[in-house]
Image (cartoon, rainbow, N blue to C red; front, side, top):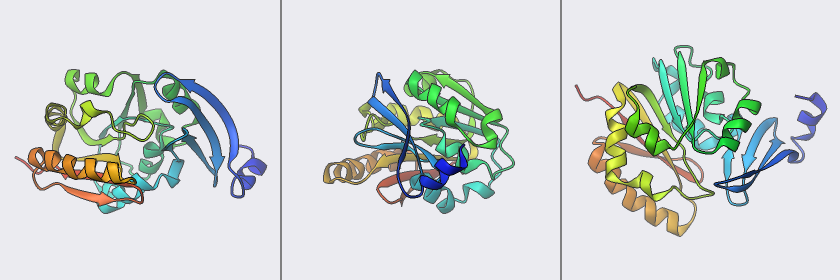
Length: 220
C-alpha cells in the first residue's frame, strides 16, 4: 500500500477500483482512514478494522479471547471480519463463503490480515453451503446482504435450524442485520422472535447502524 495514498485517505475517500457485480451492481473499492472499504450505492460491505458492527460484536461477546479453531464466514466482503480476528492466535482455519465471484476476487486481492494464509474461499450460495456441509465450526459469522437488505431465505426458521446444527459446543454465532431505517427495525423486531425461538438464551448487540444477534452454544 502506497504510504502517501494511505496518508491522503485520512482526508479523502481515495478510489482504488470499481467492478460490476451480478448481485449488487457497481461495487467500489476505496481507501479510507487507512483501510480498504468495499461499498455500493446503499451500503458498506467491508471496511477493514473500521468495520464497526463486528468490532463491537466481538468485544461484546469476547470473541478475541475465546479458543476458536474453526470459523465460518457467510458473506465475506473484503474480509473485514478476518482482519478483526487476527489477534486470536488459536484460529486454524477460516472458511469464507460468498455467492458473488466478484466479491471473492476482490477479497483475495485486498485482504490484509495475516490470517489470509488460513482463509479458504468458496464461491457458493450461503444457504446451499450450510445445508450441505459436513463440517462444524467454533465461530459462525453471518454477514450476507444484497445492498442494505438481508435476503428473505436467511431469516427463515429452516435455515436458522441448519446453522444451529453446524455450531460446535461452546461455539458462537453472530448474525448481523442492518438496523437503520424504520422498515429494518420493524423487520428485526420480528426476526428476533424467530431467532430467540430457535436459539434460546440468545441476545442482541446494537452496533452503530447494525444489529447483531448472538448465541453461544452451551447445550450438552
